[in-house]
Every structure is written in C-alpha cells, then in structure tokens.
Image (tube, rainbow, N blue to C red; front, top):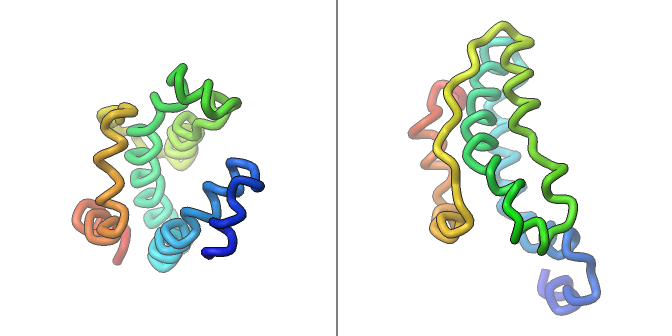
Length: 129
C-alpha cells in the first residue's frame, strides 16, 4: 500500500480515497456479508434498517456546499431515499430519520473506525447473528 500512497498525487481523488480506505471497507463488507443479509426477508429487513441509520445520518453531507465544491457531483450520490423505498417495497415501516452528522462531527468518527464491529454488534446484534 505504501507504493500506492507514494504515487497518490498522480491518482484521481476517488482512487486515492479507495486505496486509503480499502482495509476499512473490506472489514465492513466482510462483517456485513458474514451476517447473511440476503438469506431471508427478515435478515434483509435488519440490513435495510442498518443502512437506513447509516445513510440517514450522512444524508445532509451530500448537500453540503463546501463538500460539493471539494467533491464535484457529491450531491448526486445519496442513497438514503433508495433505502427508504427498499423498506417500503418489502412492507416494512420506515423508521424516523436519525440525527444528521455534520462536517464537524465527522472528525469525531475517525477514532471509531477500528471499533466499528463492536459498535455495530452492540446496536444491531440481531442482524449480525
């Protein structure tokens, strides 16, 4: 990974972000897929509620003017509405939207990344069993 980081200024921002966070993404992906979210409609509902909480909390960031200046096209990428529609499509109630994360509060997330598994297990244990 050091070779990628050393050459990072030559890569587009999306590639640099992907290479810099691939370990975290892989860890989360393995955790989620290990919980068999597509095994049953019930498990898929747990998965969607987890997605709802996550995407709902970051939804406002997609409309942040400064972030959109730094990351053109960001406003076109939110997934929250799609998650809500998926919940409706499988006949589940859509929960109240979670509290929004602001740009300043995102700084407090960085120490949590290594503890994501523990935090998710505590809040979403039924999904992960």
